[in-house]
Image (tube, rainbow, N blue to C red):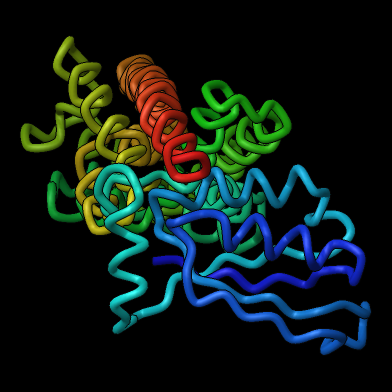
Length: 315
């Protein structure tokens, strides 16, 4: 179940309550008039099944409530209620599979903002990946994959193309391109300094059987990126966020960026084309499969929600 907290102008209260009370997937509806002071308005709260949240939020948006009032969606940790169980049974599908588009869009929009925190984590991941390539240590490559935050802007690009929410596209592309460029621009001079101090050599940076996969992309690199994009978007759009860590570990974006920065710093020019191709294949595969996954989810849930909502409202 999701919890709805609404600030409603007095002239819309009756209509909002009608929308909520007429939907069988909504329960625990309460209204407290004139409780808000800044801005003024009434408080309306309710619980809605995840599978029924999209039509309910769409109906509230159709009343322009997101402009004249406010709509807050939160997920309670635990809810014991027979009425809530009945609302879930009235909703189509299974809660874990439900995609609440407004929640997904808000999460992606927030996490794909170009911030100093994003740049810091991506730069640290790039440096860790460079050390992993230099020392030929796969465990460091895995660590870099986990630290890297680059999936968020990639997910924003997928959602922008498939939802579509084109306003997300410039933000996602900007964050990704600027972030990767910044990480390389910071890491490469540090590797150049390490090279001058004798801590990193061209030979060490160019040899490593355990991490050679970074500079030797093949068809499987693209296949894994496709699978990772599918898994990542599923984890992002459903209530299962745990698999995202596995997605981070399975793709080779940050290791490729780390290798490029290392190669630029120590002058291992032969490493760069392979790492750049690896990066391009991974990004292309994730964006392609992620976008297709969102499209399929949109089509499936449109077919599930439409007839079910008509039955709930008119049956």
